[in-house]
Image (cartoon, rainbow, N blue to C red):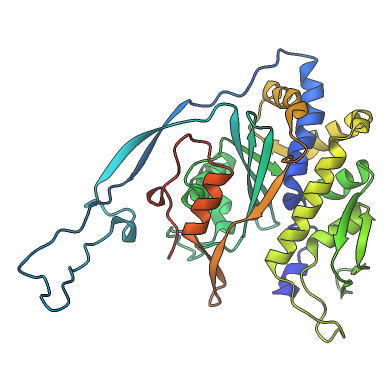
Length: 370
């Protein structure tokens, strides 16, 4: 796994840094746009229709009831056949929370897969922001001709057969919704080369390195060597910190460092970069941040919407500025390497953080593989 990971230079990096790009987008793009047009908040539908399977109580047939065990044969559950026409569905109206916006954040690898994926939310009422990292190998309840029912392949599957970028985004949002219960409002795609440029532009990021991180790949001229402790990293060093997953085999201090550890490193970078971007000196960086944003960010946020988010920055609470999480995983299927989410824990996390509705998201709104 580690060799495959390191054989693709400059991938899996910037995306985990994606919330920083959101703030960059807000600060840089917004300052530019506010000079040209009136500022107004993004428009999202106040009421959303949600269609979900109807869960009815089991039908008790006295003739087949087991008198000794006093049990009832289980009724077939619609969840086991998500697209079975015989299943009954109901439509429920969900009301949006005011000033609450959600974002799908992603970056593409060289093969066109969405290699690093996050869902973020901004709560304008409480001044809080949330980010949930979604493991790229999360199994999705879909059927594909390639047999790869992983989240990482969602964007590429949507682009196939002439779907193009819009088809890729539409399928991406749909398949992410099977894990979180709703389609994110906006998407933000980041090109990988922005990572080093942005870190260097803000003067580096301060992170805690848990142990000495060493990895060498002479075929790619890749040499990672980061000393442990609290350190300020430049762009290239931060890139290494975000990429690190495992020591070389045979290293005296060899140990595994999974995707989950790597996501924790990436979340550290996000939090540190957000703090730097919100400092007063950021105003002097606007020209460079604008260039990075315009050259490396693909989004459906309009300039006037970006400008509105700029005005909300002073309302962010210092104690809840940014909360980062990883999608709860129940187990790993090693054959094919799939991550299987923990539905109960996912529901609790979603409803506590990024749920854009006044009502709670329910199990019927998810399509998590069991």
